[in-house]
Length: 527
Image (cartoon, rainbow, N blue to C red; front, side, top):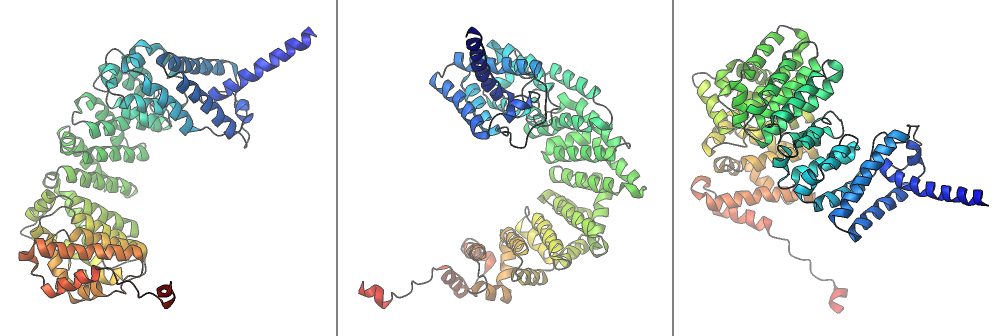
């Protein structure tokens, strides 16, 4: 009898222990998968809800730390006691949202000092073994918590270092990188990252290095001070110049491209530190090697991104400008991917007013710019639907920043009436993606009164605008009305430029008026 009672007590205890252990087994990557097989998603949800309710009922710092300390304990015990088995197809999936909400609820209630100083040991035990899907949420919550970042660089530097050691975790690395971007002005954090890089050499560790390199991109996004991670820029440049791994080279060039896009000061740092010069030299060498066409493509994209933030690079490195404009002029001889890339790059190159002015100054005594813009206008009408769509998107980008006089001049060089006719012909075709691009293009160029005047003077556009049957879809009818409203607005604000006929504007306003309601039927009148 005693044996039976003892056995029953043991089984009862084991059942309770297993249920609790099951909850925490979801929070760590290496716990026994058999426990995952013993529950359903609904049961897991109930377990999460039970923990949440327990905390809400006793919502205080003591209860919160009790739950987190148990979490650390259960993770440790699970890693020591369990072995990984195969997972059945019916086991409950890891519920990232519910667990995140629980962690966010608890940590959100802690003061910064309580979280990062008074209970620092708990975090230092938790971070190394935490499940990546949990860890990334913890990293984000801490990053967003007011007053946390200064502490992570001083009193709680050990926590910052612990996060740095998980930077190569594929699932959590991105969010940890965002956190570390705020901390890299601390020498100890940088030393830890340098150590990790040193131990992740070779092609097999390219992904780990990329996680650390991403810190440079995030740092450029949040700060113009990159002096603290100049060493990281140099490490990325080493990869760019390493011919043994082309994929890693291209990824590294993309990182510098993202940094260049982040702002003028960051772009100027790339020039000051000779990184732009090194990439330019690499592009020149790659032209001699037919197997390195991708290198030239990625390098051109990098320079175009650089030009968006720092237009003076166009004059410093004119060779890539001339080559790109030559590709636009011979667009019909390029392959599909090369043509699409050329127009994407050209749109990016001409993005800013300063860049347009720079190009006009560079080619003022030649017809190079005029013929390039004429070719861009011709490409507007040539090729498959996909090629037209991408070309229109690139040309739309060109007109995003300009003065009225400049926009009118460039529109004229691209074809003027011919360009208007091509756009009008394409908007009438039953291809949704192409129609959307045309409407986006008009939405952009109709910022400039002089271009709107060109459209008003074009009979085909007015006839289309006043034709009630030109659009039979509510979506496109709405977009058409937006264009007409823009014409009416400019006719009132810029009457000295538009010189719009009052009768025509009246007809356009009448078009926008809602249709009269139909007369009621006899049956309705009787009611």
